[in-house]
Image 1 (cartoon, rainbow, N blue to C red):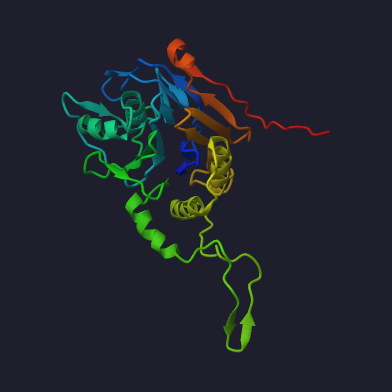
Image 2 (image 1 turned 180 degrees about the vertical axis):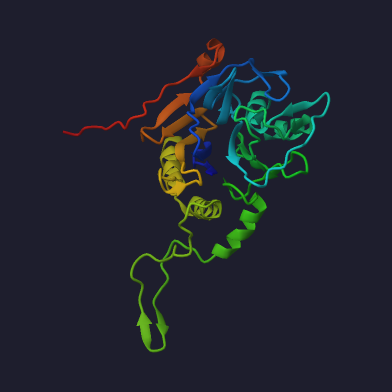
Length: 329
């Protein structure tokens, strides 16, 4: 369970944002991976090198840092979202090409592509293999949303027909069903609006509105379908932020509409699936904003030239996991 959206501010700043909704504690933190970062594929133990530096939400599993969302030094960004009962990977590797398990895909994508156009071309040599050799010890059903410094936003859904990118014209991604199903389903919510419906007569009785009623059609649950519809509507009607700083605040308000408190969604094994963090990725200014569940402070990490040139090892940035308060008296 996750929700992602792309957005552009009036000053031209481009953004990709997401909620990370999961039950298993991922312990993701803002992380920098340097140029020439070497990682070992879980599938075939082959070594890969990331040509470009990455800032994202990372955690170290075994010898590798894994990244669930982030951007590289050229502004190409990505986020992985769960795609249960829908992701279809290849059964066997292809000799001489790049064979990966799903949770490693972002490392390759951000580490070796500058833009969506690069990604379209280079995907031809990549194969996602169904395997339980990954860091989660089980095949992970995932799909991905990508956005780059131009604002182009695309989705990749492995459904048994190879790896191809589809433009995300809505600017939103959640979970199963697939993106095309969600687009079609939006037709059921054309009655949602920002303004009130007026009074109406039923027989001789006039019924007047009791309050704001234009959004009564919007679904209020936390299913992937509900979150997609709600986010698509809110993204479309929310006032466009004027600049990059205002955009971060605006996007966090959008994400709050689909942020899941701990205890609302309980899995069959009793674990709570909740929003472990929110991230807002500024692809123009190369800044990652990170809000953990336990502390609503907005942390930021900027991909500076100094960081790129001088930080030669992975670097985790600590965040406080207790709520900070600003005392006024």
